[in-house]
Image (cartoon, rainbow, N blue to C red; front, side, top):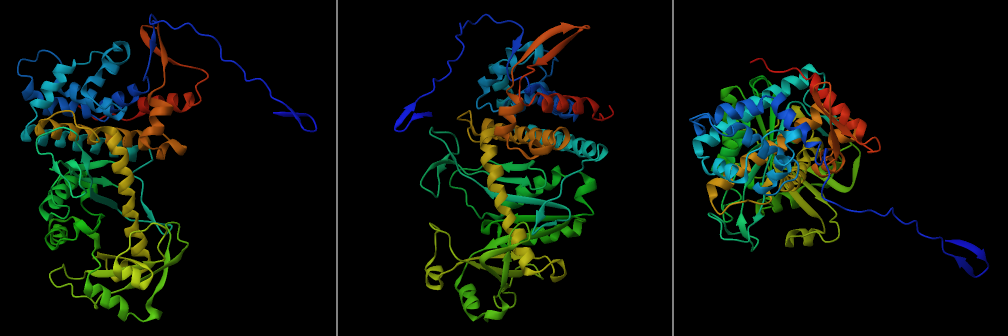
Length: 477
C-alpha cells in the first residue's frame, strides 16, 4: 500500500500466479526423492543385510520379496512420514528410484509373522547396524556427539527413559483405559540423548503402571544391548528418568550393572513426600544456591539445595544423594498444597553421582536435561508409533520396532550426512527440505540420474548428503 495524497491510499495489485493445466500423465518425475537417501543409508550401515539374515526363516523357499528388504522399506516409509502400511505405495510406485517394493498384503504378512523370536532377531540386527554407523561416524571424524549441561560436555552416554500415552480409537488387543481418562497404549521408551537414536521400546496396555520396575529394567537392558561393546564398557552411562523410574528395584539393577563392567549411574525424579517437605522447611537459607540454565548462566528465581542425610533413603543403593530445586512458578503451573504454602514450586531427584562428580547445581541442571526426551517422543509419534495399524498386539509390537529403526535412520542421517542446522533438525524439517523433494529421472552413462531442481533451496545440502553417503566406509562382508 502506498500513499498518494493526504488521506488517500493506492492499493498495489497482487501478482497473479501463472495459469496451469493439470494432468496426470507425467513421466520421468518422482516425488519423495530424498527418501532414497534413507534407503541407501540402511544399505550402507548393513541394516538391510542384517534384517535379511534375521528374517531368513520367514522366506524358506527363497521366493518373492526378501523379508529383510520389506522391513527396511517399511522403516524408510515411516522415517519419511508414512503412517500406514499402505503408504509403501510411495516407494512401490516409483520403481526407478526405489526398486521393487513389496505389496501391502506382503508387508502385512511379514508383520503378522513377527513373533518374539523374530523381534529379538530384529533388535539384534539393528544393534549390528548401529555398531557400523558409530564406526562410520568415528572414521569420518564426526564421532558420537556429546550432550551438554550448564555449558559443559557430559562424559559418555546419556539414556533417557520415559513413557507416553498413545490414543487408540478402536478396540485393539491390549488397549485399555489410561490414567488420564483416555484409551489406548502406554509404551515405555528409551532414547540416546547424544544423538536422538531410539534404543528400545516396550509396547504396553494403556493401564500399565508408570513406575513398574520390571518394565524399566527390560527397556534399559534392551537399550544397553543396542550399544556397541566399545561404548557399553569402559565409559560412563547415565540413565535419566522421571519419578516413575525411582523404584528401588530398578535403581538397584542400575547399580548392579557395574558388576558386569557397565559403568551406569542414575538421575531420577523423586516424589515430594512429607519427609521431603519437612527437610525442605528445615533447610537454613545459606545452603540454597542459585540454579543454572543449560548454558551455564544463572537461572532467575530458582535455587538448589542438597537434602542428602536429611531424608531416609534406606533401601536405595549406597551413595544415593537427594537434591531439591525450588523456583517461582510460571503462570499456569500445577502446584501442590505444599508449593502453594511456600509460594515456590519444588522438584526433587535422586542421583548416585558422587560428590566429586559435580556440585548440586550442576547435577540439577544435568537432570533437567531429561526433558528433551519429550521432544524425542513427540517426533517419534510422527515417525511410526503415534498410530498403530492393526487390532493385533503382535503386529503393533513389530510396528513399534520398525518405528525405532526409522528414528535411528533419521538420527544416523543427521550424524553422518548433514551439517549446520540440518544436523540437529527435527524430522518435520528434514522431510520438508530434503526427503519430500521432487526430482526428474534421466538416463545417461548406463545409469539413472536423479536430477533435483536447480531452484530448490536445499539442493546443495541434499546433493552433499548423497556424496557423503557414497564416501562412507562400508562394512566388510
